[in-house]
Length: 101
Image (tube, rainbow, N blue to C red; front, side):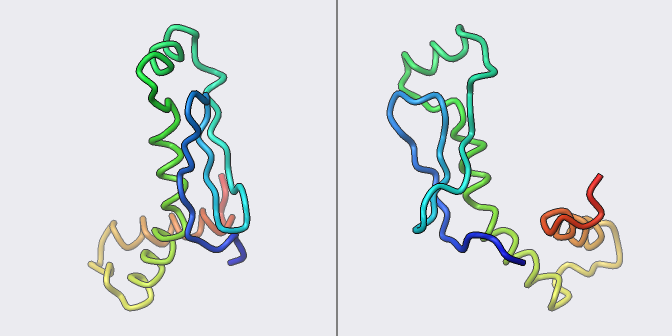
């Protein structure tokens, strides 16, 4: 799978209404908060918190989670004969753009 190699990090910019996810080669993603109402955004601005931090951190962890999940599936570490293994394989396929709904 070809994607920008990690590590990816959440690069929080003070007083911004978005969280950037960056790699050593530049920006990977931007999580925008422009769809939120002014009251919600102003609360974050007053508290100097990033309203998109949770999303940005999750995105930043994606390459690590993909590699870990793929390794666990490759060695059968999740093959419990049940739902967990199928969910893991489906998540990996979704990340590769296979079986997209």
